Length: 233
Image (tube, rainbow, N blue to C red; front, side):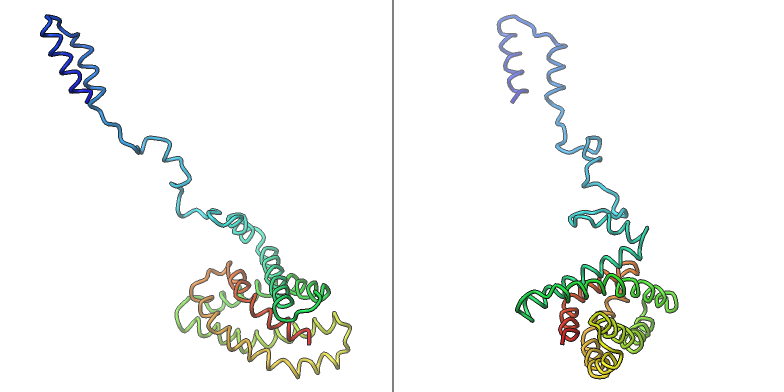
């Protein structure tokens, strides 16, 4: 439109014997004919968060994700212990609200949360690091070996420690604790064998070593509901 207007003005001026200033006309035409792109690589868009390095771990849409990954790198034992604290605490809260019912048992909540913090997180940190070191790789055979060791050796040991811990906290005698283990250990392992082989296939096949405890705790919220019910019987 500007170009047509300029041509009309020039022709009108010529009709009245007036010659337009060629420098002004040229400047105006050159300015009006240049179409600036809506987005330019030379604008500030390159500095936008949308153009971040994809190889860099950042929080993104998950608040605290970058800080959590940094903690896993700098203080892995503490980070994993706190992860299990949250997982076990949440599992018991859900079990008490939706399954057990009745008044909230604060002692049981604290006991199971402390178990996640003091044993599940730290022991899982060392065990899975050891397992990854002894059986490296994510091929089918390596994953199968890890699952076999986890479910036949680690699972019974873990459950034994779990029942012993609950008994000691409750003030039970070693005889009572032994009876509890004999009565409920196999049932607890059977419950594990129905869930964890599939979970650990995903864990060992696709999840990075430092995120194993986090992944297990996400899945284990439901399983911890099962354990909290067994442990409270």
